[in-house]
Image 1 (cartoon, one colour):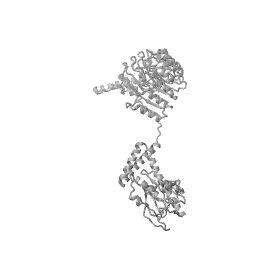
Image 2: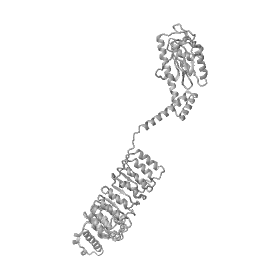
Image 3: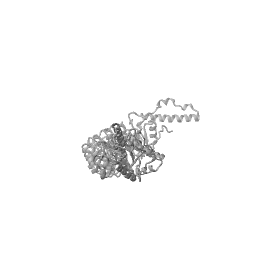
Image 4: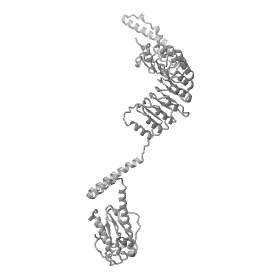
Length: 586
């Protein structure tokens, strides 16, 4: 052990610790440091006259203990600056003495004033094991004689001791930070520390740069996570036409609705959607207004009940959800605060009980109601709905047995209907359809398929009375012909005469070319020529007619009508194929 002593008397730490500063620590007296370093026989009050040999012995013992784990490099020793003031450098528990110098005031550098020395001893982990700054007139010299410094020297020594103490505390703080790491990270950090001691300066610099880059990358990732620029706010999602076969679809839906709390419209057609996921959607979508669950076969009444939490729900489509019963719909139908305007329960297992609830609680609210293929619903239940729900705009009772009296009641009460589906409702007669056509002048779409008793009278009245009609589905009407559709051509009788005239003229031209007789010409009859066009009074808005399995229809006449309408009318023939326009056939 050696000490580097110069003029001034303060301790200086070497290496990396000199680069960091910290607020000054509280200082202790010379008596306290002497009490810690000397044996019981050498202690005297105030610490005056203590022999520095005891202190040196203590430092030697510490040096021997620390030498097992710490290597004081020559580079660190050379870094000690000689400034004309005496230094006692203590690094990793080792006090380094320099050569003895004679100072300007005649004192030997062996006469070390305790006030000038900071005995800071650090173990191999950088923790401070002893640090003392002496602040009294009690002094200790290497030869056992008291020594005093000037006020300026004492001030300089105090500042140096403060810096040394600050550097020591910072190193101590660093070791504490290592202790605060999780077990895995602490172990990793310890391995890096040991490796850095055994590597060359260039390798150590490379590892330091790599760890620095990793730390910066981690910091950037944390900053991005904390400052997310995009906040999910999706309000409408339609995945009804997407095949959802991935096993994580259920968890993905939950994550989506967790992030998007303001969903208003959601459409899905997934047979594996279960009650628990539907309940999660309802709980996380308080503003939901439009919900379509077509063909979600796994749902049951238990899942539908939770939709009562969606207070603003207006549109609910449960087509193909076959396992819904009256009990599942009851909370929705009996809620007095319900906003439900559209309800489709096609193919559901419901009875007249649900029909009565609709007529009682939703009479003035419901506008679109679909009970197609509800085989348990009877004419009584339908009658209760058409008598009370006067605000209906769309009604579908496809394949629900209905009497003529119920349909006549419908024509009288539901005058706001624009969409009516009466496919396969029973043996309805022409008189019922005539009454419906005259009362429901706002109809835009009607389905009269598979009512075999209907004839041309019913269809003609329908096309004449419902001037706003856009789509007529007439599949399976075996008794109708092409006659109800001929008036779509304006002044069809004149067009019929024109066709006859054109046919005659073509025959005359053929004879003239064969015989060369000019007397066969009939130019005076050309006044009957007529350019056909579509009627503006007979079903002027009609855009689509479906006549599948109507075997009494003349396809050529329908092709002429389609040609005259010039793309404003599309027709499906007996085979379900679209009719191609063809004006004349000679």
